[in-house]
Length: 170
Image (cartoon, rainbow, N blue to C red; front, side, top):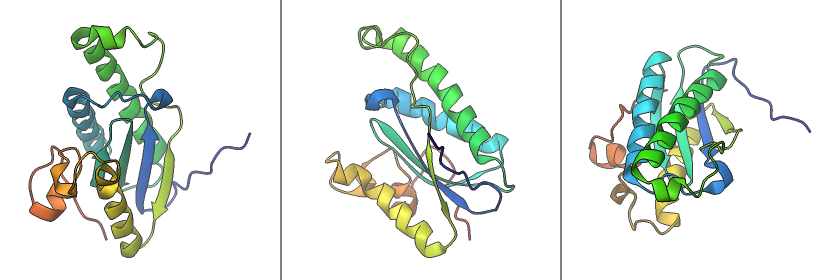
């Protein structure tokens, strides 16, 4: 089985997607989403990365991330998924034990792999940003992108805080 090639040796934005294990809706509740954003902010700071945009869906995540140095994507995602997984599992065990009981203790929160699309142009960056902001609308969760609290759409359209610093890159 061949593995997807990761282009991680140049400076450009990465459009990253990863899903919850077995597409479980582990991000249905607000607290796991808050946990994820907190971990995203910590890992973003550690790597001096810029978050261009994000959307947290009930069963998957989209991120637009830029790094000041090449070669950081895989380590960034590994740390983001590892730390958020541990904290989300703890929350589920302690606060939602009936839900947690339906999940095997050794099941991960996230699927093992992630998808990355490297973005070289402003046009493609705007296209991916719009695509991910429309995700909650397409899923029928809200009628307008700015109604979904768990994305960067409110930052871009209303300059409202979204729980993590959003920065544009050229």
